Image (tube, rainbow, N blue to C red):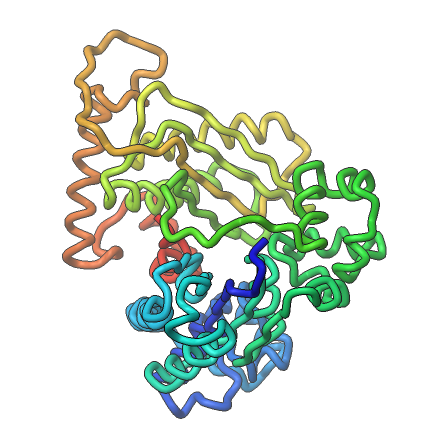
Length: 415
């Protein structure tokens, strides 16, 4: 752990909604949301009524009858998010972007130029407000986890500095839901055990935590609750996997539901792989059931692939086998597909038709090469005319996603 608090976590407040209010001043001060069928983001005025991202539009209007919906300007989100990160890089080269609207920065080597960390944080906030017109909250601490927690406490549009020696006093009275890695399901599980603050989690015996959350998660959260976090701010990340997921609501676990969804997810993932001339060997699916319990299944190939149809078909086989293992699960609420063991897309080695069991999934066969060529042609058409200009028939005929792909791509832009 650093001797002084030099790690900043900056998070643009209600970013998508704030951008819309910036673009249309008539929306300022009003309860508004980006989306329609699903709330993609909500303004603070809407959040005051309980409206949250991921909520159905119907539920949001029940909570806030005067809620205004706007469709979203995804090119502006990208532009302004990039501009905010550029401001941070004016003060330190050690910036780790973790999403379209948030990043870590380590200013340890820059204080002799720009002043102490708190002053740098204030300058960054002032510039982003004056130059971009956006509110941003910043946390400053000695560890990444604590800086992120501090930025959440600072919202909306604030700054919180956690001084060395005061970390546990600051951390332990906060709700456990503020911890990095504690989502709604984990928070509810902890609450059922009477654990509602980070201090209570810190003082829960490790054996109990591991039994409740699993060994890896229990040990990790225990360390974070005691502010044991040795992770450094990393400026470069090698791509280890690419993934996409889709929340389904409550849908029957049938081929009519999961096949088009998996094809759509595979299309999103492999498009990103091909754009960077990458391919991967391991395909993993994740299935979440009605009780929020999730299972994963994976398959590793002999050669890396980036063809949409191959990834989709393997994902379908994995989901089919997983559902056969759980015949009593009739409802699925989420599907996810990821490709890992990623590396540069090498020249594809042609293969003779030898009648192998996995021949249709080998990248060098005539069928696979034709599929890959079709994908590349589709990529070029989309680059020129937009993503909706062309697609797989199974997805074009089964369009029901309420979250635009442009929004999903912003969230998945790490690869």
